[in-house]
Image (cartoon, rainbow, N blue to C red; front, side, top):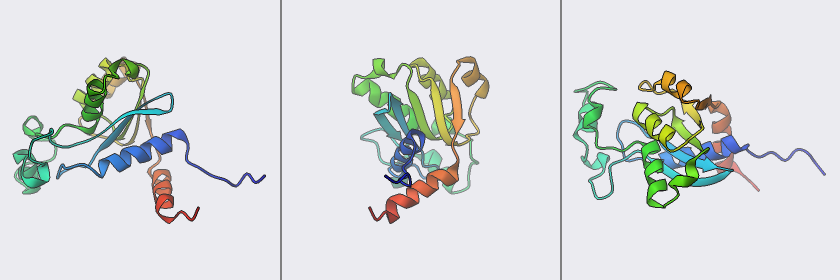
Length: 172
């Protein structure tokens, strides 16, 4: 039997799921995806966008994002006016909606960005033990993450892109 068979590890597999979720983002300024996983089982996904029933960001639902796209405000300014829920918050809320919030203790949060302060607080509250991410985020409180005992790992983007490319070019 050949040992040449290659497949992504668990971190790559779930990060690809988060990248896929990010494709559903309706935010005009940043596309983020998140997946909550426990025991190698996906509990919930989320992407950043306006709440259900609210006009999508790209349809003009969020004036803050429109102002950002028009150059009226800089990245990081006016975040309190943004109508989009973050991907991590959406995944956490979906756990609550689905009645699996108790199952998040000890889970891993995969996100295309390190969570912001608010999402970090929510993740700590529901018992997330580790963040696995692709990119840094300027509004992250690393001291809080460390104090809470949450591990953080930044994956190699090139490795994720390799696997993403193999999904399209696969001849299996």
